[in-house]
Amino acid sequence: MMEDNVDKKKGRKRKLIKFAFSVLSSLVLLYIVVALISGRRPDFTRIFSLLGGREAVEMAGEYNFDVGRNRVFADLDGTLVSAGTLGIQVFDAGGSEAYRSSFRMTEPAISAQNGRAVAYDIGGTAARVFGKTDIIASIDTDGAIVSATINRNGWVAVCTQEGGLTKGVITAYNSDGKAVYKVSLATGYALSAALSPDNKSLAILNLTEDGSRISYYSLNSEVIDRAFDLPGGLILDIRYLTGGDVLAISSDSLFIVSRNNRADTLYEFADKRLGGYSLDGGIMALWLLDYSVGYRGRIVALDEKGNILGDIDTDREIISISCDESYLAILRSDGIAIYDRMFEEMMLSEEPATVAAAGATKVLALRDGSALAAGDNSAIVFTVLSTIN
Figure 1 (cartoon, rainbow, N blue to C red):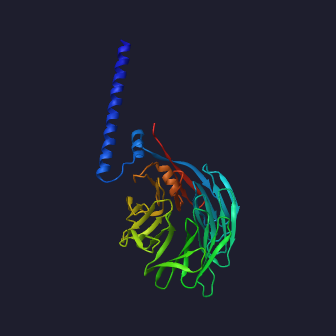
Figure 2: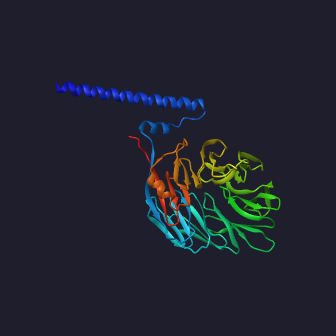
Figure 3: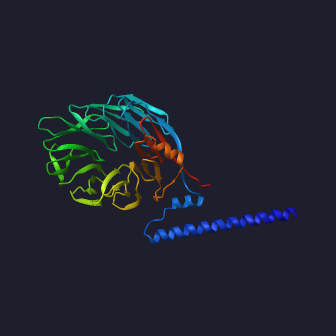
């Protein structure tokens, strides 16, 4: 009699399992059909997550900083670097300090890419190029530093202001920190510069009396190759893309300047105000505000071809956004929010969201799949929990 009861219970359990599997299979099939009808490619990673359970985010650790004031942060190929008025700190993936260097700065700034970074003092005359474990080069300039950028090969472009009739001087340094090229602009204030991925060309963003200009130079000549002008427009930032074109963001559009000097608009937002943007990570994210009272607006994510990957409506104050190929991280005044590749908000408990909001000023989506909310004295790390059984 007891064996019959056991067999009946096993039978009911098998029926429940079959029923649950049938429901999940129907949901997956429905998802694929809807995705195909809407023109979106099905995300099979998302499907596997759906079969195993929802992904969630937890607070995984904390980094503690002691490099002075005015801290800035960057992703050093999956690890965190912080630069402040007293120097530089690099942390490993576990939150332990991997490297530190004393370096006095008044207004610290940083640019990082592919495991290397340059920290510099805005208005000062010193910069440091470094990796995860050591200082690679010390750079001293004659004029006040306006900006510095580093390319994927560790080459650095530094813009300085050097008085007289010269409005700006741009110097290129190779991966060993040796100056290999220098050009002076007779007119126009140099805002920033970018070195091409092949280390052969330099693009300089400068302001003129008529608007903004991107000037191109070959590193084997001081004669300008070509220039792209945006009359009456304000270009805020530029990036070299892998193929050699330049990505530019202005006060009303995101566009690409091709090597034949043609501008192709990726996304126009003349009817919006640009609240913030993220251009580092292969995916571009724009925070666009309505011209109205409050913080009502939208975050739009695009790929390098201008395809819209997703958008999110928001009506809360946003402090910082960061996007990579896996996640979109948003730091709001009331906490942090993380979205997956389908632009669905991931589960996040109230406690870490509140912790992140306490004094955080910057969010970074790191390449290892985690996100970081950084404040004055520390940073909270959030990791994605896979609930696949």
